[in-house]
Structures are given as C-alpha cells and as structure tokens.
Image (cartoon, rainbow, N blue to C red):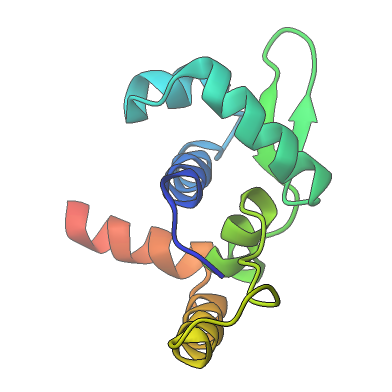
Length: 128
C-alpha cells in the first residue's frame, strides 16, 4: 500500500460523503465545493470507488452518491486500495526492498483497523 495524493483525496471525499449523506445522496459538485477538489477529479475517483463497491450512484433529480455499506464496515485502507494501484515490489530489488515491503504491510494493517464510521465520530467530537 502506498499513500498518495490520490488516496488522500479519495478518503477526504468519502468522509465528506459520510458526513453529508444523512437524508439524501451527496452530489460531487457539493463535495467539490466543500473540499476544494476538482469535479473532474472527483468523477474519476468515484468511478473507481463505484467499481470497488464502496459507493452507489443515484441518478435523476436529487441524485448523487451514498456509501454502499455502513460507514463502520468500510475501512480507510479499502478506500485507498480502490483508487491506488498497488506498489510493485516484485521488480528489481533495491537495498531497502524488504523495509518498504514491510512498511507497506504495516500501513495497510493500520488503516484496515480504522473505519469511516470511527473517523466520522472523531470529527463530530471535534466540532462540538
């Protein structure tokens, strides 16, 4: 697993979705305005998130996106993996290959234990 700007933007966008999807689907234009992420970039990210089964698109007036599963059952790692291709560590081995391979595994394990629901709860406590 790697941490990239793409993964960071995806987590930010999905967290916005979690925080704003209470009664209706969330539009990408709304996420774009609130988070300062370009609409065309969000369209690319949400296409990948939809293919991974993490979000559902709803068409028509009042349409937008919702999480496909409860926020407590979606991990940060799932969001990042959905939009980022895995790091290729099978090519030429460098001196620190094993270090980066181990670090990648530990990062994935850490982020797998953090759900979007727990992040939303943390955000709600901060806003109070």
